[in-house]
Length: 308
Ligand SMILES: Cc1cc2nc3c(=O)[nH]c(=O)nc-3n(C[C@H](O)[C@H](O)[C@H](O)COP(=O)(O)OP(=O)(O)OC[C@H]3O[C@@H](n4cnc5c(N)ncnc54)[C@H](O)[C@@H]3O)c2cc1C
Image (cartoon, rainbow, N blue to C red; front, side, top):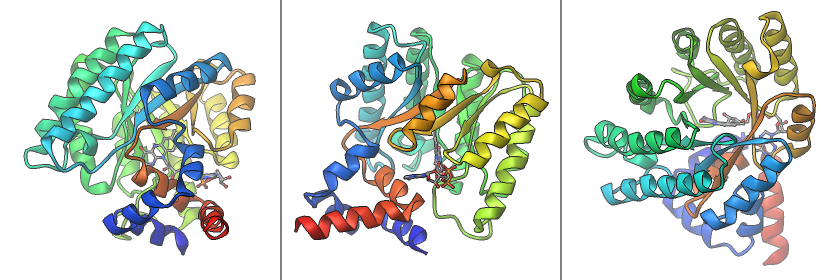
């Protein structure tokens, strides 16, 4: 029951102020968001890649309210890509982007988000890497998929995310499982109504397996975004059954979650990509991590009580 309450709080400005100002918040945040600036995150990328891992970088931020903020988001990614390029990290690090940070929800937002994300995709291609469009709440997805399709005309390697909890996703997976496409499948991290999404964990897991099967049997490049050991084992089985080699799909996990598993899969020869978020506007990202595992919230609250 805690998960939905935390997800509701993730959209509350009042809670944002309270949580962000609490002195004990920072160490807990650091587990999931290991830096606020490019200078802080670059050594982390270097460390992960030295260990045989790959990376996807997310400059945290979402639901911005002005055009200027959307331009700042674009510029933050451009600065990051320039730094990665100078260090020759283009073959190891890609970008993950939330279109709401690029202005998608503002008036004329679809065009604004496309105009902001295009130079980021171009810059990524110029250093030999790519961009994946994250999936946000279900009301944003038609626009996200349309932007994805538009970007793929010039940059076919642009990826996108689909969420197993949504009823629509099996159909999206069939459409996207075509040659050259890169699709990340995740369970889904937002609070969605029963009209559009499975609410029961077991139903979500079953849908996840059906969707992985579509992706593995398709012609695209599946990216399995999960920490769930059962789903990871099933992914390996499905890949084998579909005759995929180890470099024909990859696993992805979040920074700060099951780090030993990142290394185990990489040591087995799998491509393992660590989703690494950084920046100052971390509230929404952080609250979704708390909602996924209520034990995280209890740890957080305990540290608040003992330190105050
Ligand atoms: C690379 C990547 C990218 C993602 N991108 C998106 C996106 O674009 N859109 C979107 O809606 N969602 C995204 N997500 C989040 C996703 O939807 C799930 O909310 C999240 O991955 C938890 O689901 P799970 O598959 O790990 O399974 P779960 O059943 O939730 O977790 C399995 C196990 O993993 C561990 N675990 C999971 N979450 C946590 C946590 N927060 N803290 C500590 N341990 C944890 C626990 O041991 C848990 O038992 C992404 C996830 C990953 C890994």
